[in-house]
Length: 276
Length: 284
Image (tube, rainbow over all chains, first blue to last red):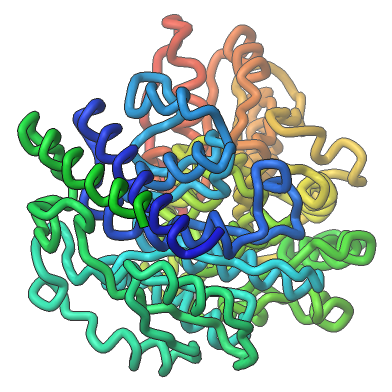
């Protein structure tokens, strides 16, 4: 899939997610829109995992540590054929497996997350198992930047660096906002590059809303002997003008008027990409 | 076999045998290879050891990832840190995600004695009992510990095992019936129905000695080994309640949430039992 098609896919996933959150009246809107391009890059072109090979221990793995951005993950998985898109009509309803954080009751989701600070350790365990068994798979995990305040992240980072897990790529969705406000004001985690380098990672900084940059950095062979940390600079709420860079949209549901405006904006983006 | 043995030594020896046959067995340690007496295992299976450093939370989470990839990790750490510092990791990365991780809580109860309350683990059974999808065991002698590890090495269920530090006298004569299956308790003394002493782990031998003292006074006791704290042998407990005048529990744990609580919870629906909380503290 070429870059334009991936960009179109990301815009379509944003629209599907926007619709889902509006209909259900719940969801982590800003976080979903922020990392849409990262998930599209991973699931449509980087990882060798498919619905058919999901159970195969030799295929790539993905652990979504920032579990709250689950709505975009659901839509990507459905679009990739892990389950019917119509399943998502039950999102957030009683007895539905499609709840507000990822669970492995959903085909395509490997580990249950939601409580922050678990993904990097889980991914490190999977990466170490791959090393021990000489399997060729690669492990990806997506964290939030607010999540970096969790101490368990740094226990896992120290472990991954110590074991030289070069089959592990951790991505930080660095939108610089968390639920209470700017990261730098709530709990300043800068410099993440310096911190991860000190913990034994190879760090690459990219525009996390640029599919081309993402794909290039994710596909690049890692010959450093170190785990890779991709600091993906993103915009929270990306794609909806009035939600962009607004902490309040972390877990906000659009009003009727906002919903219609958002649909209009996303359809304009989609139309533009189709016409290119 | 010697008349007594340290349960930790037996667990390590048995795990080493399991690792001979299954290269997916891993011992995971948080700088606790000394206190967990892992040296004999490491001598034979260094490649099946994962050192995490002093990071108990990460030892559980990494083990979740290892188990997800087909490994059979046994995490060795002091019971106090493994079940309290790491409890969210146990809940999420072991129980909730259903990862086949075995948690070996060493030096449980008051084993660390003069090292102080930071190292004491008198709440671990209460905590682990409350976690769904987690079996809980307290082996009482070397035969039972060996049989339990044989089971855990092939089972696919997450489990917590609490052991102590000192050598424990033999209660069973061999491994055959020392541990039968999850949820199965053993009657180890059957003198009569005046009183039933229900215990497990490090206090089971005290219950047996107590039964001997009672017999000298004409009181006939039954002693039950509740090795499987969860799942619980509710059927056997009800049979005891049917035919015994008094049930007394002995344990090295807080009054809240341990073996005594488990027995009381199991029998309370009957409505024909009077529960009394009588506290006897032993001075080691």
